[in-house]
Amino acid sequence: QVQLVESGGGLVQAGGSLRLSCAASGIIFSISTINWYRQAPGKQREWVAGITSGGDTAIVDSVKGRFIISRENAKNTVYLQMSSLKSEDTAVYYCNAVQVRAGVQEYWGQGTQVTVSS
Image (cartoon, rainbow, N blue to C red; front, side, top):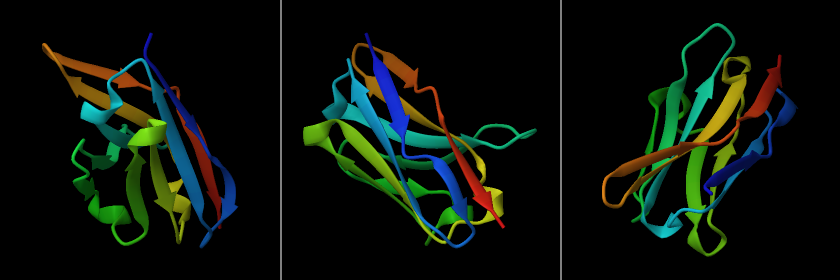
């Protein structure tokens, strides 16, 4: 059974930092691309950042320079380090895993709430 478990969300003041974690099980983590998405109230879910199995990363422009994505394969965990947080970063953050093995499999975590107070 595949599980993606996000943690690290919470309430933080504007300008503060949080580190989100996504712990994966039930997938071949080392060959998976892991993404972070977020969904603010009343808005569509948007892609935030991604990291490939080889460690290549991509970040959406709105958080570039403030968010960093990284992975630790030994722990089957991906992190999203968020700094200089703004009120517009308030959202539920979701971990997404894409594994290509005899087809494409995609999995989602349950999400973690990040609230930035101004």
